[in-house]
Image 1 (cartoon, rainbow, N blue to C red):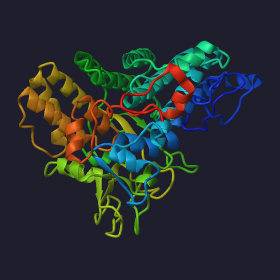
Image 2 (image 1 turned 120 degrees about the horizontal axis):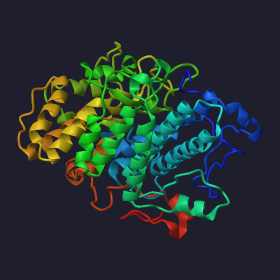
Image 3 (image 1 turned 180 degrees about the vertical axis):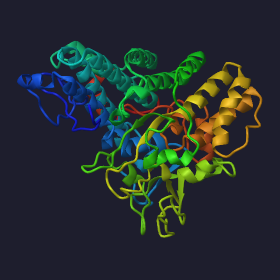
Image 4 (image 1 turned 90 degrees about the horizontal axis):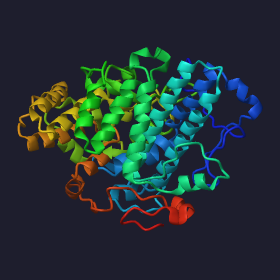
Length: 487
C-alpha cells in the first residue's frame, strides 16, 4: 500500500451495507459485485478496505463543520465567530448551549461515526476471506480497523453517553441485528467494548517506526496504547492511565511548539495519531476544515467560524509561546509573511487550522493531531497526582511548561497540581477538540461557563442530545438523554 488516501468505497451485493432502517444505512459510492471480489483478494485489495475507513475522516460530516461546532464552539475556548447574522446553520445555538434533539451538528456527527463504524465492520468481515493476501498483513489491517472503530466509539460515548454497539456487519433481514443497531447500551458497556477493541488492536499493530514513509498515517501500537490511556482517563482508572502511558514509547516532544501545526510538522516525533491531509491535486484534505475557520472579510480567506475567546486569551501566562502559535490576531503577520489586515471581521482566528500553501482551498494540507506525546505526559501527570504521587507528576507537568517558555510550576499540593494540570491541558491543547469534554469529565463545566456568560445546565449539558431522527426509528428501543425532548 503505497499511499494511504485513495478513493474510498463501501461494498454492496457481496456485503450488507447496514440495517433495514434508513437512519444507519451507509451511502454507497461504488458497488462491487460478487464476481469482482476476487480482484481484491490480494495485499493491495485487502488494504483498500481499511483505507476506506481512514478516508471517512476527511469528510465534511465527520471531521469538519459539525464536529467543530460540537467539540469547540460549545466550549469556553471559542466563540461562534463569523458575522453576527451568520448562524452557520446551528453554530449560534451551540455557542449559546441552547441546542435540542434536532440539532444538525449533533445528528451529522452521530451518523458520520456510524458510517465509519460500518466501514470498520465491512473490513473486519471481508479480511478473513481474502486468503490470497498476506496473513500478517491481514492481521495488522484488522488491528487498524479495530483501533479506528474504538476511536469512533470513543467520540460517540463522549458526545452522547451510551449508544448502540454495532459489533459486526448487520444482516438487513435479521430482526436481532435491527434491534442491535437501534438499542442504546450503557456508557460502561461502550467503554468496555472500546477497551476490548484497543487491546486486540495492540496485539496486532506494529510500532510507529515499522511503517514505510508513505504509510505514516496508519494506526500504530503506540497510538492504541495512547488512546487506551485516554479512555482510562475518562473513566478515572488512574493506574491504567499510568500503565498505558508507560507503554507509549519511541516518542518525544518537539522543541518548537508552533512547528507541529505547519506542513513541515506532519508526523514529527511528538505525533502519535493524526488525520493526514495531503493538500495535493486532486485534493485530499479535510473538506472545509481550514476554510470554515479562516479569517473572514476583506483580506481574509474563509468563513470566520470558531474564533478564539477572550477567556482563552486570558488563560495564557505572559511569555507563553503557545498563545501566538494557537491564535491569529487581527493585524499580525503569520509565519509565511502573510499580514492579517485590520479589515478582517473578527479579532482572532484559529492558527492551528491555517494552511499556508493552500490558503483558501476547500481541502488543504492541515492535519489534525488527535494524539500527541505531550498529552501522554499530561495524562500520566494527572493520573499520578490523583494516585497521590504528586511529586512524580510535577516533573512531567514541567516538561510541558518549559517547552512553552514558562518556568516550573509553583504548585506543590495535590489540589494545586490538579488545577495546574487542568490549566496546562487547556493552553497546550487548545483547538484540538478536547476542551468541552475536559470541562465535563473534570467537573469544571458549570463554573467555566458561568464565567463565560453561558448557562451550563448540570444534568443536561454533559451530553449532547441523541438525534431525534434516530429516536423516531428506534421507538421504544432507545430513549433520549436527560433534559432533552425527543424532537
